[in-house]
Length: 548
Image 1 (spheres, rainbow, N blue to C red):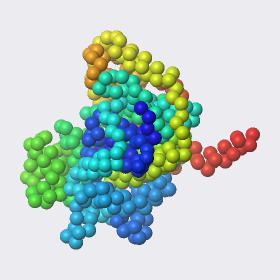
Image 2 (image 1 turned 90 degrees about the horizontal axis):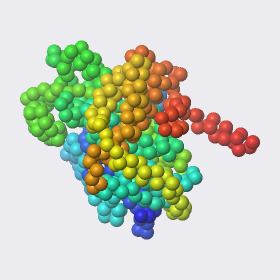
Image 3 (image 1 turned 60 degrees about the vertical axis):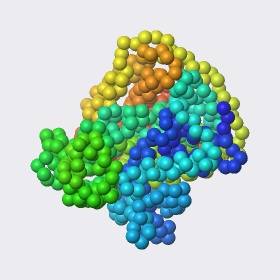
Image 4 (image 1 turned 120 degrees about the vertical axis):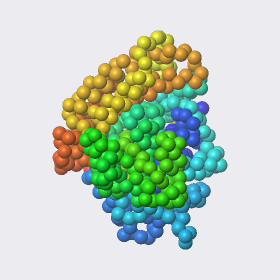
């Protein structure tokens, strides 16, 4: 099947990209691993940051400054400035697409405070902002004539020399390997916090599949050690207690009944404070009782219902026990805004590392980043597809993928791959989580290496080809282990504490590490970790190389 532009990922970034890439004359496909309605974007509840008055340069500069401060010295000012200046336009576009933001009595869009922000700039739809935006974008994409290709698991990129030529996909309905040819490809497949299985707000299939695909295509990953733990998740189910709960005035109290942290501090500080209480044997609770039933049901209806249905807790009368959970990943494919080294390939959303979030994402900026850079990726992919022709497909790569799938079906296995995934999640949380050190990271690395060897001996117990969930689980495990290794090696290399990365053996921030690390997989199982080269020095060096 042939398309002008293929977008992989059905979250906000992917949907925005597909909408922008589609015109009256071209063919655009949006590929999703599962159901198009399921994404981390749709579960994002708190809101989207924006200074709504595009002429208010003082407030826009403050938004830029807040984002830079949260990034702890690793933020890319060019990308941050672009995002913050585009925010009001993006919110207006979302309103045009049908998003019904909460309003003040005078009809203006309501805005709430969020952790790390110096102003009330977070626009919201109750506590279901992500879901409201996602549904509006799906409707818009359908009216524009975008082709939806659900239940397609991307195995690899198809490329020819230094250009992308499409994607190689597994049709999950039939277990057949498919080739989708295109002039341009946009990757918007989300982050990798799902590998912390059992300790994450993400669904367990958010295993960084497309980051592993990017590694195999020879691309660099950047800032992989920066995994953001949301301070507040349900203890039993990991359901996210939106930051809006604290933004609306909720307290965090320990089992002694004491407040112990500034609830609206940055997420890394709040998460570490909660973990410290728990390590001392205390439980931690979200306290909303003082807000009253009416306000809770008006401002936080989804949270109120989830607490009642999942835990039996009435938030207007009872405390809700919480814990920190892996939530968002700042690391991803190293891109300049949305472009990377492979021509015709664009990356956006959580899986892109464009420097907007640096070492620690500011609450309310994820939905904004997804919208802004999804839009930009779509515009750039459309332009590229209009100026270039299709590149050939290297079918040798496709044959290797077909042989890999046949191998997984061919043999028998005695190992429980779901148990391996659960064990991996527990190991990552305990040893590569909120607090880590050289010993914990080394132990985790050795265990991941061991699991990675095992993963290539796994086979499907069920040999049925139609909708074989075991096949996908094995492929996800392989990718999760590949990404886990990149995280651990990056965390070992960064001998300091900065933002979401905290090492108790190096508890201070060090000027020596005022740069990002990039990871490249030279061949299967062999990674190269290095400081990201200064762009200006890189240009100068290339000039001299070209002269020679």
